[in-house]
Length: 120
Image (cartoon, rainbow, N blue to C red; front, side, top):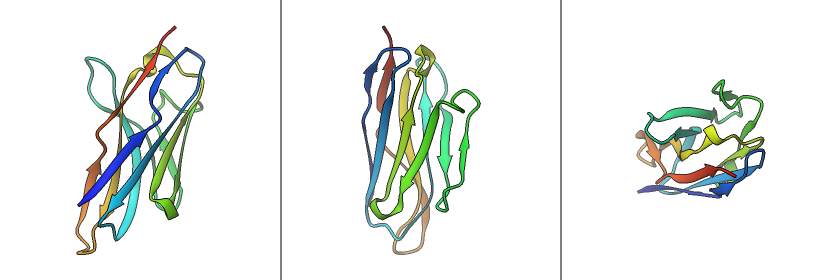
């Protein structure tokens, strides 16, 4: 069993900042890519940012320059620092991890999602 648990969401005013965290736990042998997707109200889920095990990052155009993804491999945790937030960043944010269990089988695991609302 592998679990991903997100924290740090909430309500923030436009121009404000939030930091999301996602901790992976359970039967983990190795974690490869980790990242964050988001699903705005009434829209499809989209990639926000991702990071490889070596620290290479990739961002969607809509968040580039405002969001920063990072990870702490010792803690099996990925972070998303979100600055200069806009109302259009309002969404449910989901973290994911490309994780190998001790049997060396690799799957994508997902967190339960966390709400981020940007509104005055």
